Length: 311
Image 1 (cartoon, rainbow, N blue to C red):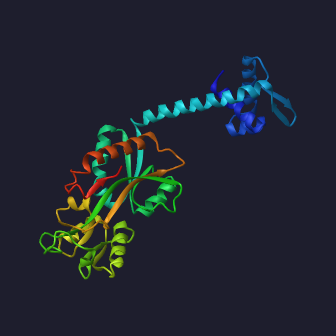
Image 2 (cartoon, one colour):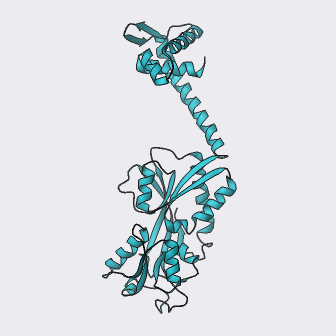
């Protein structure tokens, strides 16, 4: 008894038609019929009642069908598991992440993953959370690091919250501090020259919404930049910027935290519900969690309250 014979048998049983089964299996119909006959000879029983235009299972066929399906499923599972082990030596992982995350802990995560699995190709798609959700939903990514909440209109996705991060105000060391107090209020940003990211950045939308909730429109001296450009503009003294704490800690800029807990964001890792991430992607997620557990509280160069790992 061979696997391809059981596959032929199961397909004929499901279609109740030899020619249609042969088309689905991409084999010649005489070859399929020959293999079914060989299987029947080995088992010593007819599996089908053959009548013109009517194919039905015999009692022996009815008994074999669930067993054949289980054998084929077990074989597929074994094949997939072996492939996934092989994928840890070669293969690829497609990760989406926002620009601020690409500029903070993603490089360290990918370095740790590459050290453990050097044969895996890493493909990074950088974009805003909304764009990443659409790309992930379309099956073009294995995992995406996003800023929540953005999944309300993407029911096909599931997300696990990883980290809560405080936003801070970054300013040039050569300029006066944005406030004399240890912490700054959103209201203190009124009429302050600000450097702002291009449209599509989660940080732009968040900052603008916070300012409007406080009763004013933010004042931009420069807008439309990517992350590196915004850091450069702030460093040059063109204005202040609201940045994630992890990015600001690496920037060499003055960091002024906000008062209260309204100016913070939650980072999550998302994947599709209907398709399990490949083994390599699951290992990347494991490495990501291990990195966050060891680094979130102390290695980002910020007070422990600025970055908090979520359970």
